Length: 245
Length: 183
Length: 183
Image (cartoon, rainbow over all chains, first blue to last red; front, side):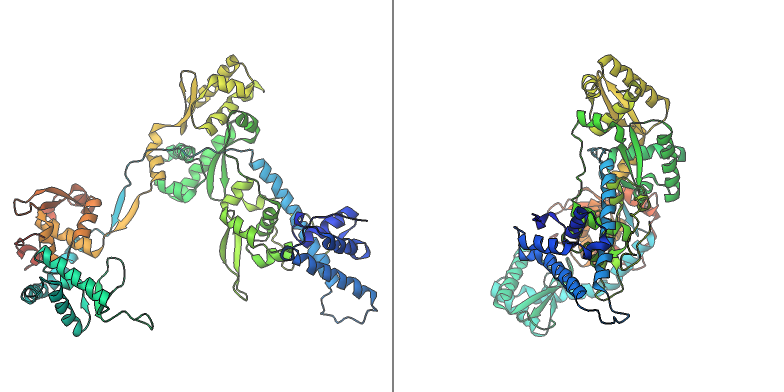
């Protein structure tokens, strides 16, 4: 009997086996006393849409079926207790698969009913600006903020005076600023903000920044930053792209 | 808000949202506890059940939604082109059936039952929001465990997975390697 | 269709449509005469009027529409746009403190006191409505003056900035003079 079957129609070898069993009108457990093995192998051999990737599961099943069939032809040695019987395992798998396949059919009918119920498209509503609630706003937090400023303030003033004298001399040329930055880097890393803290006029800021860009380009300095808007640190030399730096 | 008003505020919210709304989201909008919200939901459900209505209040897990009653579908369809849910492919439905009845379950078990690779259908079900990852199995390779979502309940029009039709009885032998989850 | 079912079929159609639907369109979808449809509409209207509901049936000429009741709008808005919770960064809190005690004050003074640039925190405080612009200082560059808002008072639970705790004894916040040149 010639059966023309397109493998793509079936969700795998179990699906095809169930189909053949259904057509033969036999019980799953009678699969090995029937023609099913031959029909299955025939279907895989004749498959016009044979493509190795999709068919590999079918081929593996064909091999298993042949193995089971050939074992049946050989005289049976006494079987160890714990050895799995491939025939029994396959029957169990087919039974389980059939159970879920029927379960899926039951679900499909629920799906059809559910599709008879219609929802409504969400409405487009002009909304007022979102309400913002801010956590942690207490008088105590405000007071602590002031204390923090007061505690670090004296140090800040001294640094400002020191740098006023130090930078003004050199900062009007890119070359001059490069020297200043380099000399600072020669004793170690420095804070990016520290270059600008007293920023007295625009030319200085721009010149220092240009000098810094020049140093980065020449590989005489590099910058690290731990997170967005975080502190930027200048380090001497080119960035090490290896190791843990 | 007045507790007596809550059921109708919920009705208004569900009407505007169109889509399923979760009980926690509702209780936040109403400024009520989840317990109070659930009481209001139950009161609203009673109202909807007591009278014949064109629309029904449906609960899917802890999501709520207003929907038309199925018997009026022909009239709605004749008048409008309602947004219709797509039905699932046979392969997706089979994968979903194994997950629904055996949850939480690994892809490996689904593949064992179906006898085919299920990467594609699992991906597609995740994408549709019908299943979700719920953890990992304490086994070799710690494979991901999958379970169904409230959207799954909505798709099949049920309130709880226990409302799924029972699996057909196993005729031959006790079947799968793990004991089936009896819903 | 059964005449007794018509009101609920109309309800289902109006619900899905979301927009106003005309009586002639309704009667065509239901396969009823316009007269019969109008009777069904009136029956539905009576149902909607007799009970407190979150949604209302409105009629505009020969068009019908389902809408939420206005009194539930605040809850609907809260649902669609939940309150966002944020906390202030240390930097913003410091900037806010300086502005609160020195108001009205320019950004230049805040920066001098804190020793760092404050553009970002000033912007963020403006955006959150905790400070506002209150004019310009008659000085070089006419810099903007900032002060705290009523929302600031509300957040700290005080009625007047004079209720803020006194400054720490010798404080930079009080002592720092205007900068000679505002960047």
